[in-house]
Length: 381
Figure 1: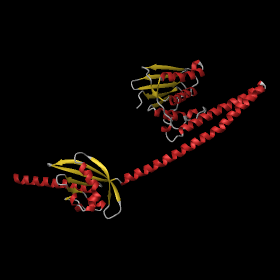
Figure 2: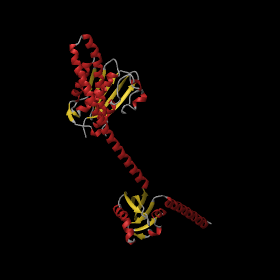
Figure 3: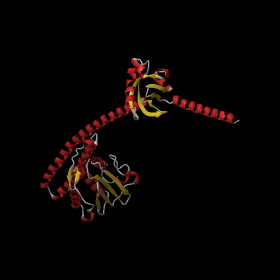
Figure 4: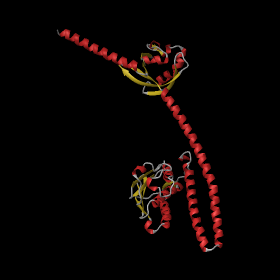
């Protein structure tokens, strides 16, 4: 009775093993990848799945054979596999190979991956060929799209540069004409001078606005920010900020001053004066433009590896839905329609901060004010 139970148990175990083997074999032969194993001691290919049919070969062409026994033409075709296999006997690795489909002119790109393993005292190489035709096509399409975008950027850059320079000529002529007419006004009565000067002042203001717009468009119109002249020089950052602040404190009444607070040990570091001057001028200009009363607070904090500058106004603030779009060219917040601006300033500021490998953030509450935070590394890489 006991012997019968043992025999029955062995039979059940055998059926279980056979079932597991059939299951694994079905999976092995159903996957899209071509999979085979190589006995490293003999160089024989021991197992290969049915996917080898995809390149026109039968399993019998490979199994129980050594690559040395292949016909010369077959050796030439699969030489990259052999070379990569020889180099991959100690660690997992992969490479791209091109394999022609047997009996056709079709060439298929494959990723050839190998993994070294041991089983039952023998060393093997598990080899996998994965068809990457779709990947290659996607990469080719992406490269083509990138090339077209580069060409469009170059065209845009050339057009914007040409247009900006063409605008400068008539603007200069108008500017010169205003100055000449202003000289002729000296011989006229004070009443006439007052009327004309009022118009001249308006024209001068619009000319300056157009010139600023042209400069901003010219900067932003470059094919990429890396073309912006960028010259790092070690400077005293606090003195640099104080110089900018002084210009605004001289321009506005005392109750609208920029108040500077410095925390931490101020150390000189390398930055581009011209670019950061443009950036901080723009941010301070916005702070005054979008607030009508109160001081502008500038808080500078020197840390171990960076300096952080926070500029806070107490103005109209920015709607929450607009915050994520602030650095997009020509984008303006919904509550600024009545205030002149182009929407280019912060886009350019971000480009200049990016060149310094810094970061810029904006926090705002509608009706209460805005804080712009700029973080700059103290050590340039």
